[in-house]
Image 1 (tube, rainbow, N blue to C red):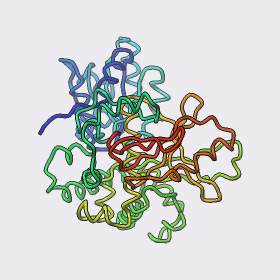
Image 2: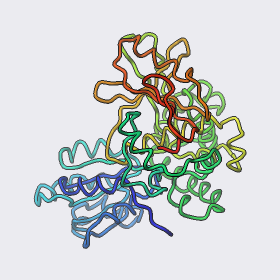
Image 3: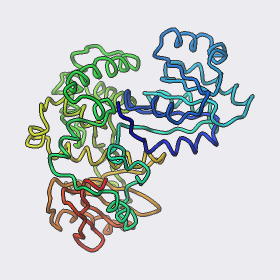
Image 4: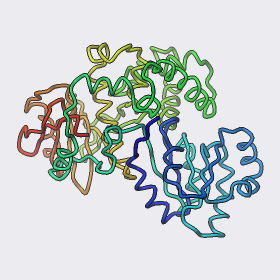
Length: 409
């Protein structure tokens, strides 16, 4: 299988030179272990807590586990043995060397309590998702966090040598971003995603919560996938599945914990009474989302009812990767008021709000950015805006608003 460079590799090497411990979080099968092994210098060993014997040792005798696997070491799926954190802290405080422990975990928020309480100040936490377009097209070195500024655009024009056509994009969306799917045999897509759901999602879910009915949870996954790119309606979801809203919220939290979805929060300014407070749901891998919603080909997906929502999902996740894969935590929001006026994405940076709209159009009109002016009326400082669309080159739509091709991301 061919090898693709990951954007996050440079940040991992920088962090490892300053922090004794590093935690790389992200969904199963996005390449966390492979990335750390690629970044490791000679002499770093690796052990996975998916191995039940190693897991039992780490849980029952953490000190002995670290004697068997001394630093520098990579420990995969460390969420299975939070007992290790105290032993790691003792080892770090004794030796005080950077790069001692590289950890991976597939349940980020499940890990955070133990990490923050025990390893505060000693550990750096980074997030990894599936392969970005920059990584797939071998532009990892030049990838930059997305902001619709003249500087970002100048770099993007140089990077994006070949425009992405409509069906090129939907083939990427339908395939997904898991390395196994990008680098492997596309004919195995159905088998891969079915196995992924059965082996990883259902197993990890059982470790986080008691699922009364696996049939209900499988139905929940499909219902959630069908609502990607939309405001969450807990009542409708509960009715469609036949469970209560409390369970819906708990299961969504589990998907978020496992790195499978992102809940985009609404932006609140000073006039909070007029703002919708429900988050938007985004699946973080569009291939998994398309498989769960049973679109059999890229062509049927592009022509179907989810076409616009899943394109928005793909664009959003590409922007999110551009930040996370540089080791950065973005401040992302959306805007929607009680008059149904909406801005798909707001990026808050250095006191400015950058408004973004997603459009399945090769010729978006100036009206696509009409709602951007709402921010100025609310007294907010607004940076350049963008309508990310299917054009082949970037063009100005109005003063301060650019139409940006999806292929630039």
